[in-house]
Length: 253
Image 1 (cartoon, one colour):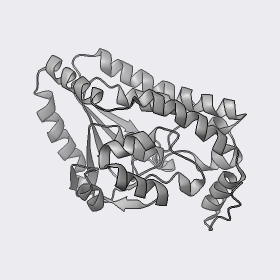
Image 2 (cartoon, helix red, strand yellow):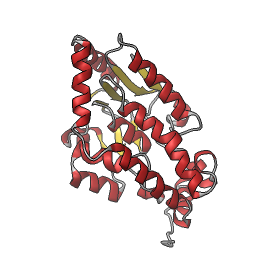
Image 3 (cartoon, helix red, strand yellow):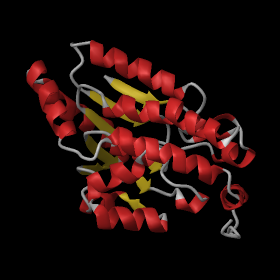
Image 4 (spheres, one colour):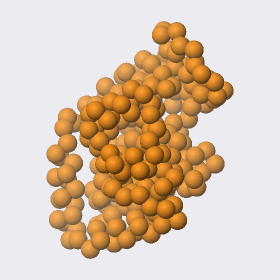
């Protein structure tokens, strides 16, 4: 089964109103259907996902509207539902990263069991660049995938890495020409679905249980801290500068 983020005209932004419910419904149906043994997760068009809606951050609309308590709840009830839906998928998930995977888009790719990348793929945990933290649990997800030192480098510098660097760091398993990516993902999925269903699901549960501390605790901390940062002047300046394509002028407020 293939799950596609389908907002190609917006580089497949995530976290829009209703996204958490949509992801939960899709992945609940996958978990309940014993005939589904593997999921390929990808993006439509030229991006995997550019992450959250930066214009809404600047304008403090939708997910980013209201008080700090409101924003924290918006993360819990929307962004975190996306994260939990992928993380708790009962069957293996292959991310076919067909282009840029940035911010929330980067972190949802990191939740998948296996990541394959097109040569055009780019990966970035760029939250500090817009005056925020990974409110989606990315500070928990990324070290699991590439280790503490490289995760810290990506987070502290907002560095965007190319597909070959991602391969050398272990963030992805293989890199393919863009036109070969989906065929490679389908070939890998075919190998996975040849395994016995009960044992496959049990193996997935064991792999998930090996990761500590608990994701839920990290998500709760992320929601609270992110809500505080959305209220800062530096965050507003950062997203405004990003949209206006100019360097930000921070005041450390």
